[in-house]
Length: 247
Length: 254
Ligand SMILES: Nc1ncnc2c1ncn2[C@@H]1O[C@H](COP(=O)(O)OP(=O)(O)OP(=O)(O)O)[C@@H](O)[C@H]1O
Ligand SMILES: [Mg+2]
Image 1 (cartoon, helix red, strand yellow):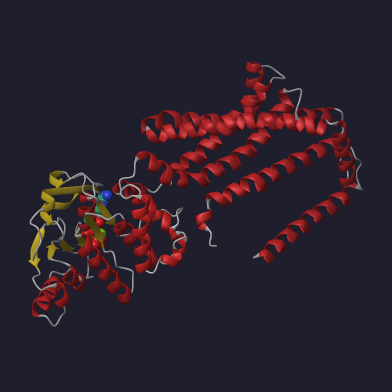
Image 2 (image 1 turned 60 degrees about the vertical axis):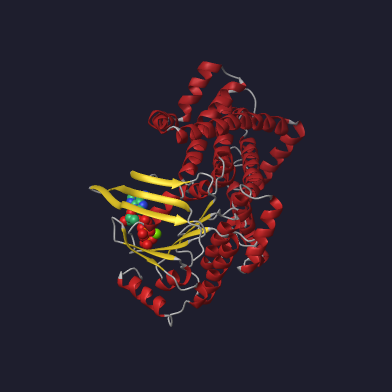
């Protein structure tokens, strides 16, 4: 593993609770994690345990009650939201171009976005409005927009949940290719043990809420050799399943 | 698609023709003082046109409507913005706006005549403003409630500036509400301008109506009514219809 041991993100003893009927709902209880440069970490955990909350904290959309979040304010962060958040009044292309203009020159932006649209089969829809797209196409657009800003940190919240199997594999491959060439870090929330073992360098299994990290598994098998025939991969997926996270 | 538009237009035309026929039939039974016929109304229209009064009075009413409406539109947006930004103002201003809306227009026109005098433009414009402002405000303010906080968050994650958020998120989601505020507001403005002129003015369509009324020229009352209808139709389907389609272009499939 030739990852540079340089953390792009560190959470120390994060606590977060929400106002709820009859008191406060504790969601994160002293959660700590570290994400290294160029690393892919998968977060798995039961539904409602606080995964989205955690990503929102990292994206700067929620404040922690207690604990520390170390992240350079310059770190270029992209976020694939659990439900696509597209501007309905902008075309597919304009949705991407709007966020790109804050980071890239217009030439670079155009090249990047047309290549990504091409590779995700959205090129023919670049002048369509989001309401004219299918659910899966919107999810793809959400992913393309995130990749198109050339992020240093990519947060993904169940990014492939409503696409069919063939397309899911194609998109996973695209993310891996982009990550290999750009060397950004990824924090991926997923309900799929298969996706976790296929993509991640490390898998973090979260407990039910209030969430802490139950178990951390480093995957040493190189990605091209990962299949269920491989003993390590089979064992790890079984372990994730046993933790009761598959939905 | 094209076909169905023609079908709808034909059905609308048939409805209007039926009403005209009924009107003609009834008018044959009553004297013109009670119910002038469509032909008599048309003659009155031509006479108003030829004397130049049609155009002169309509223009005056139109200007007063636009002045009162324009002020109400700007004030409505400004107040809605303020209330959105500073929620404590809400508890102070919202009851006041409701009170302004509850007071019947008759009370406002009496006050306007007392404060600004008869035969003043200000009197009419004031009434138009007072009647239109709450309508615009309510429409725009409800539009703020419809802004999707998740889209604002998305824009912030991708480092959009406050100006970018306003231009690309706030304005487009407010646009349909602004157009509907304009549409409802203009209808209120136009009607209240005529009402104000009827009671407290010496010019405009409302004043012409009051003259026709006191001179027992019922056919002119009908003629002016036709003009009011035509102007509102032109507004609603011409200017505002186009604006509405533009504001919500992204909803419709191509
Ligand atoms: N803004 C909020 N106000 C109150 N409660 C909230 C808020 N956001 C999340 N919660 C609660 O916090 C808990 C964790 O929510 P979160 O969305 O982080 O779960 P999750 O792990 O992403 O679940 P899933 O896998 O179903 O997406 C849930 O019980 C949820 O109801
Ligand atoms: Mg979630």
